[in-house]
Length: 322
Ligand SMILES: O=P(O)(O)OC[C@H]1O[C@@H](O)[C@H](O)[C@@H](O)[C@@H]1O
Image 1 (cartoon, rainbow, N blue to C red):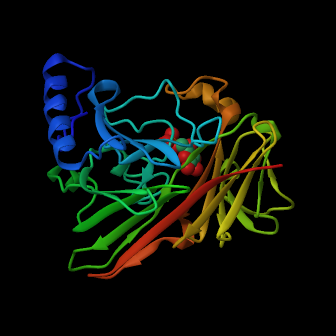
Image 2: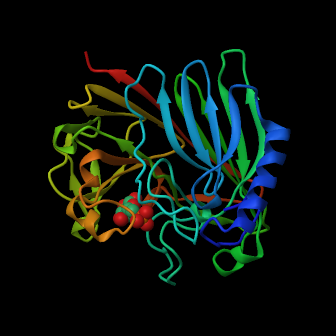
Image 3: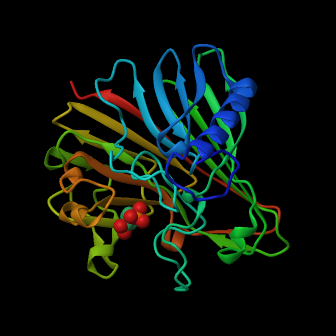
């Protein structure tokens, strides 16, 4: 999937791969940082950014502006889960890392059969800037180039941009600007797949006493008692959720801190045995990830008047549980 192409061809055909190689050369000439950041060809001629700082390494696909890996140098395992069965193009979202759900979260809110989770995760994004700061953190800025093809899904003029900061933490800021004459409403999520050692030895801390909509039970509103434990399919939208949550992982002996801003909803998802119904994931993959998604969903959808903008932000870091 080549940069700035809106085609959805798949397969690394030699011609397409040549096109990707040319774009990679241009991108490297413009943005590469010696020994720290480069563009390479990934699966299915997808363009990948490989970044390494003093603190961590990361991989980002320009298809979907999707972070696929983030691993601090002192961590034994990546913080993020990425399915080896993922597809990289063909209108599919890559299964893992941080897919971007935009301009709606979940099923088409208008019931018109538009694709689940919107269209931003299935498009090639444009790289606008790469910066290295004094603390050896790298910030990558990208935006979703406008395309005629959006018209079938979305009529309002917008600007959607992302900043990804790779350092001691992984920081993501997704900004939507209304460039239209009319107000529009979006829902969205940073649909992050966190890698865990064994889902049955994981608990999510910070949601005790919060209400949630249970998507596995017709969206009934329920009250969370205690931590969130995973014993079967879990698909919940937590309402008015707090700014910090903690994924406690006994098997990997680590804690992932999830900090959110500009968001009042957190989606928690694990498909459990329904993983076997997903073509791009192994049947038992559900044991090694949990999605904790910083979102604006349900009553927390964002209304933007002309000229207004909103930034959804998440910051993640790893800690030892000792
Ligand atoms: O398979 P997709 O489209 O990436 O969605 C995965 C899941 O994403 C979650 O955010 C939703 O709450 C689930 O209902 C959904 O199944």
